Image (cartoon, rainbow, N blue to C red):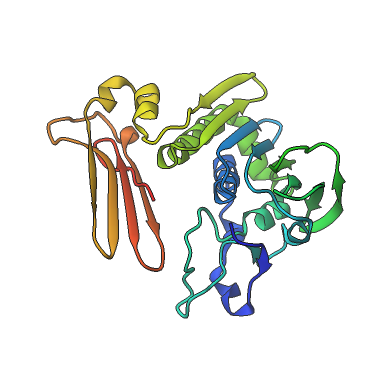
Length: 280
């Protein structure tokens, strides 16, 4: 993971993340991608849709105090450096271009508790309305990694907040689907999704070198048994994953998972199910 830095003004116009965090599932997805970019091997996600609350805890590399000062600020990120002339990042990262926490701080209270590898102290930062209300040593986080807590989500967008609370079961379903997509692309990462209100574990994945155990567990053995591994590449792209035969027909599009990951030098596509799920 690269160091969090302020972006040069020349790329500010390329970022438009403040308009894309429109529901709970996208918020969760962006926080989980931040954890994956921090090389986390275990990510715990807790949500309460009616209370507008999200907690994502990981065992990644953590954030130093100097970097934490920049966390939540506009155009401060670890994901969009080494920018090429055409404005495309030269290294691969996941999710938005490092602007998710800045966007979240506009629509919620964001609390970040973190301990960086090799550093003696943990630190906490609290942000609301894009302004830091607290930054100091944290006594709660004792192990390396980062915990991000989002409270009062959409507090300044009452219509969106009311819609989320009134259809909280649908929101939870969408969050589960979002986390499942991430799990299929990153089977080596353990993901746990927990609904605080019902105290139900909605999803739990065991690290694996292949997505097939998860496909079998979540989608059923009748689906996983139809899949065949594919892998091909050349100088410009790589295609890997699992795909069904033309004779294996599914009743709807729920089993289609496609992810395209692009870096400056290659295009990587992963595929699962009768269509595709892609893997870097």
